[in-house]
Length: 418
Image 1 (cartoon, rainbow, N blue to C red):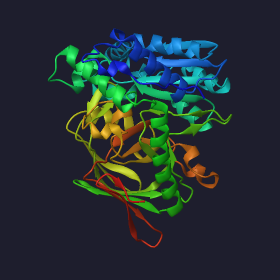
Image 2 (image 1 turned 120 degrees about the horizontal axis):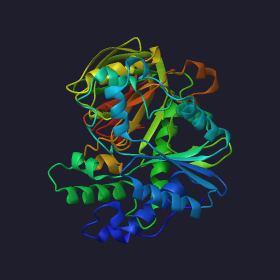
Image 3 (image 1 turned 90 degrees about the vertical axis):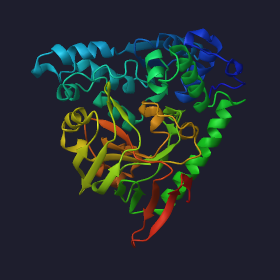
Image 4 (image 1 turned 90 degrees about the horizontal axis):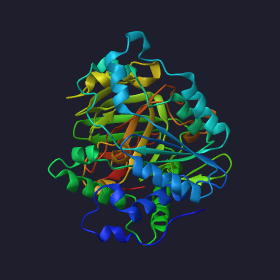
């Protein structure tokens, strides 16, 4: 495996400004993403999903991929301003049209055993807020349902990483000047990705060992369900007999190890989509296709979300979750302890990749079949979407429920008890 080591001297600089202002930081970050996260192999085609405004990191990733021996780098840039034009002006009957080659391209990446890298972080936060939320919810792009198919098939080695932009930085740090906000966001990304360690890869492996140990302990207990309890939350999430806990240390069917999220602090599994009951208060906002969902509260009964309310973004979320029967059921439950770096920053990032690694979470929609043993895979939730919602925090305790009804502490005050 190729990896990056050595210290990141750029973090000692009082100002980092935009990504392009510090080529060394950009190079080290790109090499960590390419060499450790995606673990690009010699001769692979590398697909990069990006957005306008993220050109500097995109180009650094392409260079790192070619240095790693990639045979070709394919860049796909999604423009939210074009999405806005579609929602605003398209005829109603065309809002859900997705050209066939979008899904065909994704499936081909799996068939040809390619590597995939995705850049997250809102490039144009709030851009869709003034549009009709029901129309917004009908246009799912850039989400492609075939992406879940490829992940479940384990045919690509892939990773997702955050890319700071000035617009995103101002959303996260509104009290700072534009320049200071961007510098601060870059410092935080470098920190949570462990680029300030002497050997970032060794630091990541140590952290993954701890999360993996928690996953193994959860597997050993074979809990019937998990119970989440905290302010506004009293939720029981049933588990399948074959649910098994996975940390973000994946391997393709060809044996290529990769780390799908940078950063990653979670262990997750697929729950029983028919056994989720109670009420849950979401602890962080959710950025959803350019809109921000705040103060979300959901009530479940028999596995299905039957009540949903939010102070903003509610109609967009309702429209999105009305797409198919599985969208109102859960496909994932994930646990995050308080020793990770993202949560310790006490920052709302408005980026699911980061916020979900600060707090335990659930996900509406499609589950990951590889997190369930063969006998139960047909019971994993099916849907054309996957939407992560953060529900954890230091004031939300998690218990495991045994087959005899006993409750066993799993997370208390953000600390593992297993």
